[in-house]
Length: 241
Length: 119
Image (tube, rainbow over all chains, first blue to last red; front, side, top):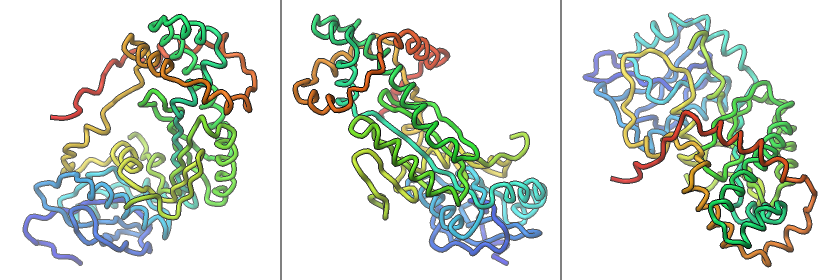
């Protein structure tokens, strides 16, 4: 039991796990200690925040991620989106763990033994442009002729064709090892792919080898970044939402 | 939190066993995760700068000129040698049309540009 009537605090929730999960160590969002609110076999990772709201500072965002990461190291955890706050622990127990009990339990079962891997790849600007000039006669011609708008347009087209190939190379290299995947929209001109894969723990090393070998093929032109194993942030969906 | 703790990095692959900075974390915890109706949602202030919907805007004169400028800057004598090794065909000429189409798709419906840099 925690202080029920302390003045003006609310319960910030990081995620949901089974109730035998070890409470995470370290400070959470807004510096609060992380505790568990348990209800019928499942538990929410919770800490106090001021009830008039907290700001999302850099360290709060990292704290949210760290708490989930350390719970995940001990077992399956369902991450909530940053910034989910309930009035108090009773509300967490009733409105989150109670009302959605079966769906949460089902989701925990489904995601047991899995992890998310986040893969991002980007072109090395100079290298990919040089490749385009070499491969694309029209680009080379326009460059020589200093016809800049047409040149830029031709480069954009060539880059986009190249991106299509490289994206599918990377995705198809690891897709067979994943149970599910989400491909994100790209945000920068030289990005190649931004995707998350749901991978079974026993497939992690195969996944790693596959990403290593596909990345090596484009060494010098593409840089791949692979983060994880992470809690399955991108793969938690309660029916309907 | 600094460099990817016990991660490995080569010139083609960086591995981070856990998120090693805000850039790794932002998308995951602001855009993903379970969304539950709650008593209150934390005000996420100042984050828009980073999560702003900056889709790849390829088809504008502006971007074309930027690509052109970057290509004109290239010192090809330097990159030529490196490239010779992996001349593996894959004629890019005929792909151009399809790619433009793709670029168009990526752009339609969204011309938002990042202009909230600083204030």
